[in-house]
Length: 126
Image (cartoon, rainbow, N blue to C red; front, side, top):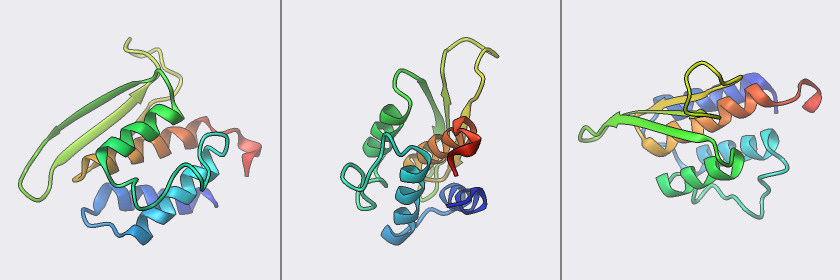
C-alpha cells in the first residue's frame, strides 16, 4: 500500500458520511499496513471499525497514553467533528500530531490515527 492510496482513504473518511463495509475494509488494510505490530486480521475487522467505541479503542491500541482531543457539533445528519492525537497535553512540544475531521465522529478518529501513523512510520517500512 502506498501513501497516495492511504491519502485517498483518509479523504474518504473525512468527506463521506455513508461509508460501506467495503470502504472500511480499505481502512482496516491501511491500519494493518501502517501499524503491523498492532493490527492484524485477527484483531480488527471492517464490520466494527465504524463505531466510535471501536475507533477510540483503535486509537488507544495504536498510540497508548496519547491524549485524544475531540471537538464537534452534532447536527441532524452531518456532524462537524475534529479529533487530534497528541503525545502530551502541553502546547507545541509534540514531534507529530494526528488530526482528522469528518461528519462522523468515528471517521474523524480513524483519520487522525492513520495520519499520525503515516507521520511516524519509518521511511524504509514500504
